[in-house]
Amino acid sequence: MFKYSFLIIMLLFIAFFVGYIYKLKLNLNKAWRYTALISFVAMIIFNTYLTALPIVVYNVNSILGIKILTFPIEDIGYLIMVLLLLPPLFEKLSDEKRDHPQKPTKH
Image (tube, rainbow, N blue to C red):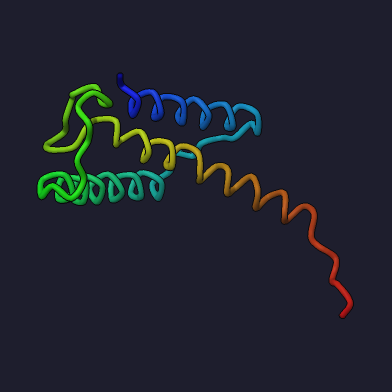
């Protein structure tokens, strides 16, 4: 029961754990807010379309049953994870690459 919900909760937990381990700092600047807004609007449009047709059908025993328009609330978990984890992780890895440039290889 609630397999999909459990999966989302575990993925969000992993995202926060990775953020804690790597000491990631989330910068909620104007660009991030616009990206989040556009991402949420796009997700709502496409998820509603996919679940209304129904191209995608969810097992009612695997979700909480709370819906936004036609899709389960759990779908937002993926987007939240991406918006919270990827920008600071990308910044952290870019900083490490900048601090430790690769030596040119001889061919």
